[in-house]
Length: 305
Image 1 (cartoon, rainbow, N blue to C red):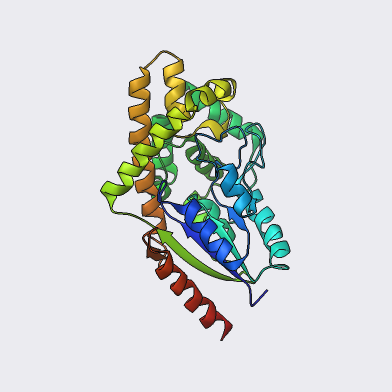
Image 2: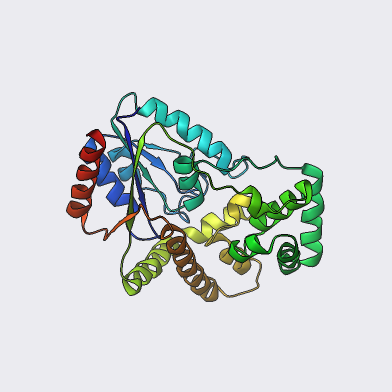
C-alpha cells in the first residue's frame, strides 16, 4: 500500500467537515471513514449531527450508525477495525477520506495507541464505587497525587479518562503518563492531514444555529427515548447530558439549550487545542475547497515521486 493515501478531514464541531469530505471523496471517486466517535451509535442521529440520507447516499460511509449505545466499544477496537477496512478499501481506491473530530480516534489510526494493560474489572468496579461515593473532584485529586503529569492534561470532566488513568497507576505501580509512550507506528500508507476552521465568532454562530436546528429536528424526543441508557458511556455526550437534566426537572428547557450551546463551544475549543499540536496539519477555511484540493493534489504528487 506504499502508493495509497489516507486524507484526514478534521477540525472543530460545526466547521463543515461532512460536506467538505463528501465533495473531496466525490472528486477522487472514493469512500469515507467516520472518525466521529458518537456517530457510531445509530440511536444518536440528531444529537451527533449524523450525515443526512442524501449525504450518505452521495458517498459510501463506514463507521456511521454501525453500533448500538449498548455495545462495548473503544478506541483500540476502532484502530484494528479501521486498519482492516483500509486494507480492503485500498484494494479498490488509491485514496480514502477519513472525516471527524474525535482526535483520539484519528491518532489511533495515524499513529497507533500505546500498549497499556487490559482493564481489571474488579479494580474498575472499586473505582466506580469510589467515584459514586466521593465524586469526580476527589478522583481527580487522587490522580494529582499518583500521576501529576497526566493530571495536568487529562479532561478533568471525563470520568472515564480519569478512572482509566487511576486504574493503570494502581495496576502497574507506574504513572499512566510514563506508559503512554506516544511512539508512532509506521503505517503502510501515506497520510495527508487537513484541518478546517473558521473565525471564532463565525464558528460559535454556526454552533448555536446547529443546536437550534437539532432542537427543531427532535433532539428532545431523541434524548427522552435514550433516558433509560443514560448510564452508558455513549450517552456521556454534549446535548444529551443537558437534556437529561431538564427531563429530571433540575433545569428549564431554555437553560438546557443554553447549556448545550456553552458546552459545545467549550468542546470546539478543546478540539482545536488537540489538533493544533499536530505540526503536519494544513489548515483551511471550509469555503476554500479549491485551495485545499490544490494542496492535496500537490501532496499526492510528492508522495508518488
